[in-house]
Length: 447
Image (cartoon, rainbow, N blue to C red; front, side, top):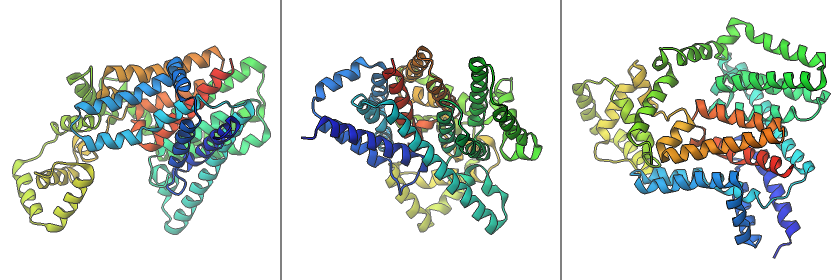
């Protein structure tokens, strides 16, 4: 039987490992090891019943648990059990980490060390990505390697951009020190080069609020900080740079979202389809895994294909043994119905070669591009309210304790959830399960 102090050390170093491993988004440094150790340490600590009672008494932890349980329950009326099963494991950190954190007693210095692990990991990962971009650019001469998915190593740039902004917010804590200038500039550069539009908007808002806060509290801000910040932002006034980092497309899409051309924007069109599917089952949703299929069926209704073209290509496909072998292999992994694979492949192929925007949505098998809509469509209105409740509690804590860091993190995550279904990938799940609970735990313990 391990002592209480030993369990606390295991908790701390496991959290340190998670804070260091998550930013790399690499299979060579799997964060799942940390999640498993947290769970095992929690179960082995003893006094399990009394610690589980704390979950019921702690609102924000209970909300995380309910969010996971609702996804579990929704599998009962889902027809896509393979997708539901995959999602159970994907979202497991949302259950394990918040519950385990209630057993962790962290001092202020320990919390600062955890933040340092995150910042150091982000800086190393950012330098590695910039170094790889330079190598690729030197080899090919293509400037695309400095931007967007190419810079992010083929992964969705919104996640690493969110990680970078988290490090920036953590660097904002306390007084400004000279050593923070270089990390801030590198991280700012990374966020703009990653060209994730919502995260750039969040960064600008957070930076503006922080500068205003400094003026209000200290009546002055070091001129070098303001000059450096304004000078850095001025680099992006160039039309060429604005196009490269997608600021112009962001401006256009935001304008469309708040106009009568709402449905002509990519996200506006997808959100409209999402709301249509939600109206079909607003109370309990469509079930874990089925929400994707329902959305894509709605999109498919807008796809224009000639039946003769589909039949011709389907006949050619069923005679091609290599294609059919690949289709059967994929259907086995994903739990698809195998009865009409050749017809579905024919439709996909014709859509792939089409220029219609609706065809593009269907071809890429898009999700809802909004986590709030995604959760509502999956598990119903209660799941949406639980998710909103997590943000409500975090904002309430931040205001009560005048915690700028917690408020900024909550704002970053909420805005990211508006533009992407962040909890449909492991990089979003582990971030939401780890960072916000640590922030909320800190705020709760500082009372």
